[in-house]
Length: 353
Image 1 (cartoon, rainbow, N blue to C red):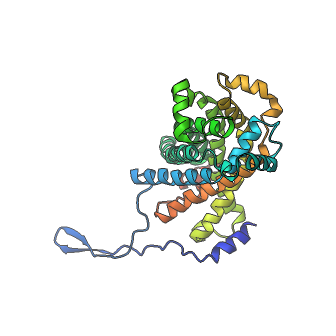
Image 2: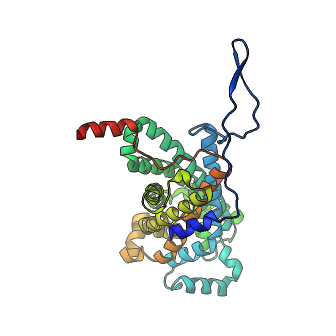
Image 3: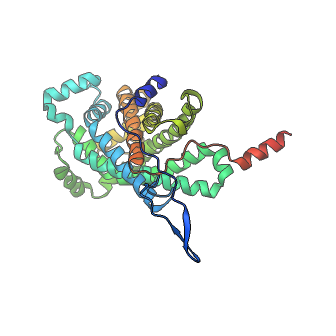
């Protein structure tokens, strides 16, 4: 399947990013001063890896990848939330769509789009931007050899750290979104819904769901980033018929999409029980996460899993595709899958002798 996708990408009408020409030679035109000859060749990268501009572009890519994708799937997310919070009325995915359209019309499927767009854009900024920050910070602390040997741990730690802050940014809009989508009689717009929560519950009304949000999103993001990174590594090693540096940008983005979808399926399964609790918690005033979990029971926490696998698999694949596409478009460094440092290879070779 991957090979057929790569063949399609190879025939893509979209041009790949041009490679820069070698820099012009430096000449000593004035004694004691090196002057480089003027060159019109565009540099290969627009910034250095790990620079402030690099992290800023990563955050911008996160805004686009999460904001666009989550907003695009609001109808599916709405049905999923209603399956979780009112299983007696909404019997399944297709029945959920049917009941919603019958009662509210097609416009009803778009309920909650505004807090979704704002909340998940802020989450994406922190998720992807801080992931690159923490990944760079932790790898420097570990050293080159340990960063390679313990790279899965590195991905898990960096993504968990990033998601902690991302959920704080997301929580207020998530609270408004869930109530708009699941509470009968609650206003259908962010403009009207936000002040009601503030007046009735204060800021706690927006953040009472942050703990179960962490329980849902941190494992989800750890799986999302670690599984993606290792899947990309495995695809280039075992599936893609040529090394990454010989693949065009279009072919590399195909690999990104495939790895993102695989990661998304695992993400949905790992985080689904906590997602159900978050949906129910924001709907039930004065309840705690533990109380909601007890009332749902083990099987109740898995309601809507099929819808969420479809949603999160597609969502995660598109997010990685958009994020990597932004890096390609803005000529940001995209390091290849990690390889064993030469110093470590020599140490291992010496031990075997």
